[in-house]
Image 1 (tube, rainbow, N blue to C red):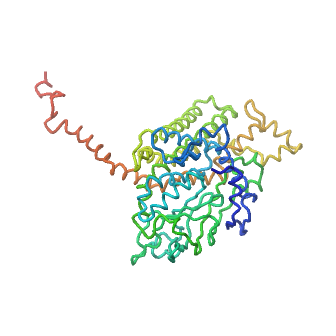
Image 2: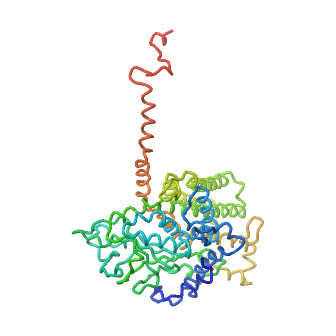
Image 3: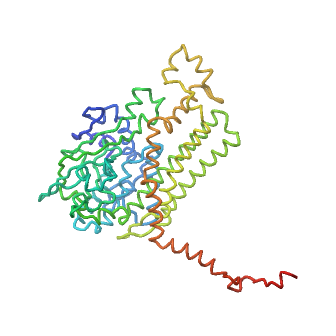
Length: 502
């Protein structure tokens, strides 16, 4: 179980990362990535801190210490404790880092119990479970194909998709691109699969793959989007961009240019059924929704605190309408913590004694979270309003004596200095209004799938588990109590016409 220094050292491995036309030699010292890397370092260090280790760690089956969410839980109590460990790590970024190292443990923790699912590669699944639970590697994942021309069938774009282009005795050669590798430049491995793999035509199943690839594999290249951390450093200070400056999970397109994947890192090969169904049939759906809902609940804790403080500083916290809006945010905060807890109490059993989070609450989280984030943001815009614009350009304005005297008078808040008020409002703006904040809106809206799929899959879950039929039967029961002639049982009294004219 690595510590923070070992984590940072592990990133200097020859990986190929591009940003602004430049090949980045060292992500741990480059201003586009260095503070985000140190935010992850802080998480690994917390595993060894006597103050936080008890909440985060437990013993593996072999007696090694591990993060609780990396280990396959065998009881609802263990599952709830692993949920609490997710929350503990998430608080270190105030809920603003969504793909922390424990996120992919949503998948790897079930590789051991569900090893038999990966037909022909069972030993690889077991080995990756053991590796993950012992070493706690930071894995990102890429499941989505590049958005080239979605009006065309898959086989017409297949040259852009990740696929096996050659097979060797010791592994396969893969080429193509995947989006979007969140925090990819700061991770150890990329997990690659396809979401909805189908035959590419003429029996071509070359892209029906699941595998892991190290980020420094020859031929693997990461093309980063713009760095909000770098923009924050250029345009201001941490006072101006307290979130952008340290929690930017830089997303990247992953290009695989004839990359060799040894057989031991492959979980399925040219198997459409396994590739298409691992999401649901191995419990990844159950666990990633638990992780996501818990992180979102932590984020709402933070947003509730921001709104409470912002309205206090503006002197509006006693207004009835403002209080009603605060109450709504607090209610949503309570809702997502309740959903997270429900997933850990209404559990289902998997193979080999593994306990999985319940699906109903997880499916509900997927549908509700995008709507709620937009609603919470809207409340901030309505309640804090122009206070988010009445801000000096940067912290440097406070260091200029020519204008500091004006700032102290015209930018102060209710019972607080101008510096205190501006510091908070800059934090609110970075949370919802900066480029970093805009990316988080897009992230929360699309985190768990597109807006139609998350609803359709909720319906499919209810159909598959018999709950839809149960609800319809409930209605039929009510309709069975009466017919054209009145009540059909003796619980109620049919009133005759003669009784109505008495």
